[in-house]
Length: 273
Image (cartoon, rainbow, N blue to C red; front, side, top):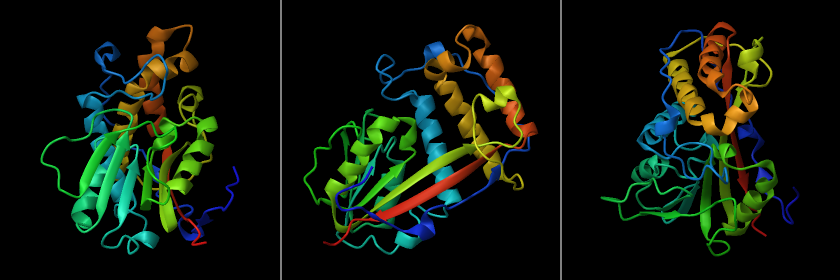
């Protein structure tokens, strides 16, 4: 997509790689998906659950990203959130990023929006507010409202055809000179077998396994369990009962075949004129 006035991209942060290798076994607990609560299974707006188990996983995921990027925002923009800045987190989930940012920048105002009502309701600092909103549709904010936009791991809920809407909305609600930050995972594997490659795609890289590797593997395993109703038709449509076994084989393959995740961070600035 080409914007009328394109965002300028900070190429120094275009790819922030943290090569995570899973080479140590991790206990796998396959949960009964019939007990999971989902936002909207029929429309498939969001593929992950919205229950306590998922909220716990999202908080683990938040912790992993803070560790991977050594902070809540990319290094190039850490000094660009000034007192009085208005910051919005698109797809805020549990609000963990917002809560941490509000402590780090107490003189700024923070807004979190998500399609699922899973954010905290009580004992919020005065500089935080949350609201329910579908970020794949036009946002109900005025033009030039925000100094900073954060969007992390929204790829799991935004289809390819909806991305132009997201980018247009980011451009519309950013103030001139405002910044947008996207953070995503790239799922990549090395020499994966057939079952492993059903779940992951991409080129291979190499690194040593760490405690962070195990945490990210745990997060990915729990995400795949949660994704079950949505990806089962693509993984084993003729034998749905085999999904759990395939998942266990997938995780084993991730460990044996040296599977990695690459964290990708991108920042962009709206032109001043």
